[in-house]
Length: 292
Ligand code: C5P
Image (cartoon, rainbow, N blue to C red):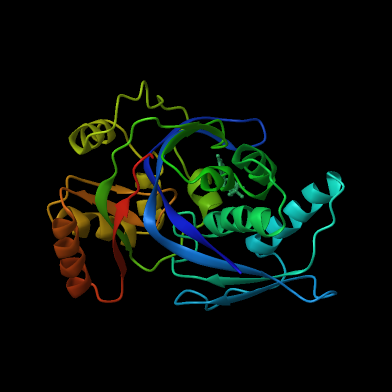
């Protein structure tokens, strides 16, 4: 059996710089990955079993292990890519532990699809490079390739042109989801302004102070629109801001917001305060992983 982590993806900055003729938006985004996330187990299954998926964990409710699940789509896409290289792959049983809230701006389904590709690449002995996996994953969703790479990076185009950051020191953080799910297409559709400046030159982000100072000059261009569609986001942003973070922002198209803190203790204290004020919210202290 192979176990693969599917870390939460955090958009530290997300600038919307334009729109393509097909309706997809052009982005300039800085992405980091948390040390928490979903977990995927893959193991060989008996002949004739095909590809199966079971979903467990705190956010499994309402998800189906059949049909259009992105994990199954990823497994089938990799099986097809293997077949193109003349390799027939054996049946496999996938088991997903869903720890992240669904449709919440931190990658969930995309991270799961990415973990599926990495894990099956190993189980099936396919030897695709991470870059090849990222390329073949793009049709599954614009956020999947960045999750395949899974390290701090800048993404442009529709989010699939990836430029890993050489220097990124990591940071303590708290993720907060106020329990509303947000439709990504609805947020993009409701945007009033679609042509904003990009992030500009990214400096050395090895030190935490440099990281926070630079991120503070950036924005999430989806934040105001998402908070209008789902006012709980504004509430979550206010609540996190009230715990003394270095910076507060929404990730992706929401509804998860994050605070960055100057120590693991400060993040833990903030998480406890947010949970006691809003016991119904999902609150997760974490560390953004540094570039290795
Ligand atoms: O690629 P994915 O299926 O994750 O995208 C979901 C939806 O989000 C798209 O159908 C589109 O409406 C919107 N989107 C966008 N521009 C992007 C990424 C997503 O408009 N760069």
